Length: 322
Image (cartoon, rainbow, N blue to C red):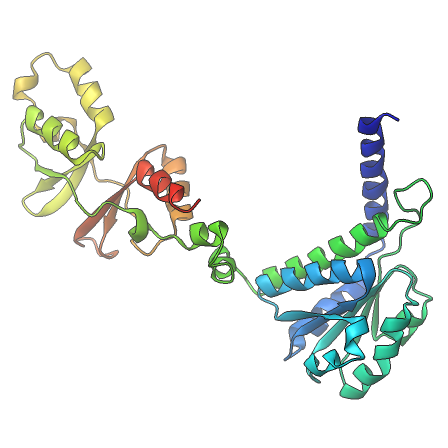
């Protein structure tokens, strides 16, 4: 067997079935999203076997993107776990066949509690689909295996349908990156997303005056080890000098002894507030093709400069998060 070629065939099979499921998405999907948006409770995902594993992942994705959700194993539900369901919840039952007895057994008590039921199933004529308030078609014609009995395409279809649900809910609620980070404070991703400019910036602000001699400018830039210095007119920052400006001055001027800060500085500078996200700082650096940002205390025009953020500060900070 050519394992590489066979792997590609499995991919092709699953992609093909996903396209078919995608093309059948209709009004019922929007009904499911609106039902959950209007609900005052949580989303309870339930299933058994492979469908249960997929359901667990969907529930986890929902919970981490702003939609309260729990997973309930259908078999355990008949032995006490039904107690986690409240009347304001929405129950999403996942079963490819739609005839899983464990799922069918818990439908009457769920209906008695008063929860609406959404079925994600591969058979719209199944008992589960008929007894649900909304039925979502996740049906596939073939699985990826040669014998077509191992859940592959069907489980993938349910998973992607769950992802589509999570993304619609997340985007409707304007759930942002910082919200995602709030629910992931323990992981490296969460710590990076929660990092703000104030966490990384250098609070030692290098500074020279407009009439500072070139040799003293070099000394200040070298001493600070930040590759920049701000240029002040009395107590007001009016410009910035980078190590790049210094290199260009060496090439441009013959007599460096008479050069002062105003001769080589850039008027003004790009600023970012201390509470801004590091991701925003990186985007600003990339957009303006620069490596440093000045951090004022506030957005007032005469605000005190409290720090400088260099791209190396960000990279050094990220190393501590790994």
